[in-house]
Image (cartoon, rainbow over all chains, first blue to last red; front, side, top):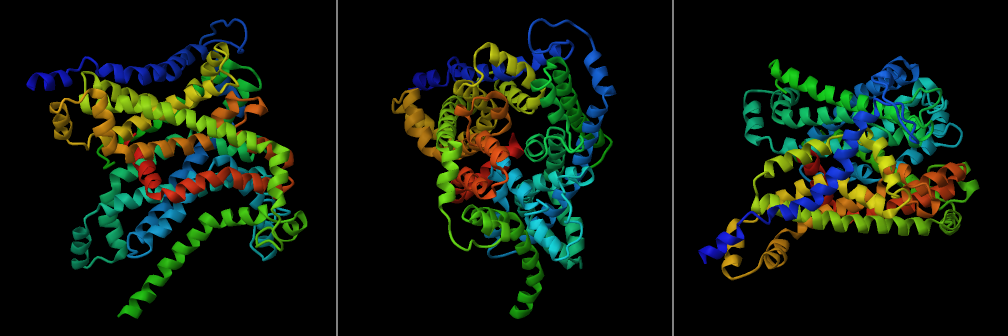
Length: 294
Length: 276
């Protein structure tokens, strides 16, 4: 008996179970990622031969007004997503945590947009925001200010509009995550705060926020990282226009790689995006080391 | 006291209800519009149709060859869910129940490499796939989707597998069960909900996937629903009745699965993002 048990736990065969998926993953992701580092140092067009040009692609990117514009747009996107979805999700999660009955129905409704395909959401909102026939046209007739113009058609509002739509699909997911964290905060802490005379706002500040801080910080970090990688909503709704006002690094990369056949330049843009995302992680680590409670 | 409580809760429910309308109102508008005539839509882009025009669906499907795209997406989802569950499940089994030396390293790899953005390796990957003849190929896309979804699947499946007590497995060993028997007769019956969750999430993710399909599939015959919808919308975008019909068909399977398995989706997606 013991022998059989021992044989069962012998670990020789264990790698046979791991290797197929690990090999697949290394071959499809790690290998191209590594090759990409070299690509970014060449003038390769995607066809024929490539020659090594050092950091030339990076110099070209950082002196290209279009790329710098897209980088700025990613930063604006980050600022929007660090504030708007978190404000809505945190408020909603806090209110939901106090709903005794029916809270689940609210949660399901808020989560629905998160599971829908982005391409459909983007088009749906493009229709809603159409200044001639969309719902904004009706609202504008009722006197809601600012909706009589093509929100996606003018450079000053286009990026903000797309961010609004992406957030429409994102905030409910965030609220669900924050609600789960909120519900794990011990009710005793709220009870104690109430006994000490804390009102709702004080309870939120001194019990809720510290209780969910790890989740909050993690999601903030992930949201900031995703802000550098956004593609689908922009591509579906504006493809970077009008006049480059919604160009982000990913759409820039897509155009460089698959329309202008500057494979080397696109690879350099990809690495720049990755480094931007890595800088977010770096910033969080530095702040934590400095003693910030994050 | 109870009435007072009720009135105190009103502003809260008012706020939460406004958000419900914001979240699912546009979907009702979409369904209404898919059933309107063009004139009806022009006069009223929000409300309930004057007369239900189901013909929008058939003409939209005909003009876009959408049944073909739905079949393509179904094939892609099925072909991805299989390998993710089998290969990912085997790896998760080994990484949780056997834990050979190097388990920590594999988990760290999966965590680290799964955070690498697509944009870092998309360019070399594209030309690599082109060399292998995997552009415009379901096989090529399925391999990619399997790779993209496997880290999250392994993390989630592993957390389910870790919950199975060791004694259960040991009892089966003593009864003389082989490894395969133990996996199929002991482990799977105890963890099938985990596999169901991962299968659902992967199927829905593949069905709605857009950017990779956009890059790797250019043959309209092979378009999945997302790029087919995108192409249709760019061609017929001014006829919003037809576009709405196609949009409804695209989201319907996803919505049906979500509403049937709400808890699995919310728990799987929120856990997956925190853990992976």
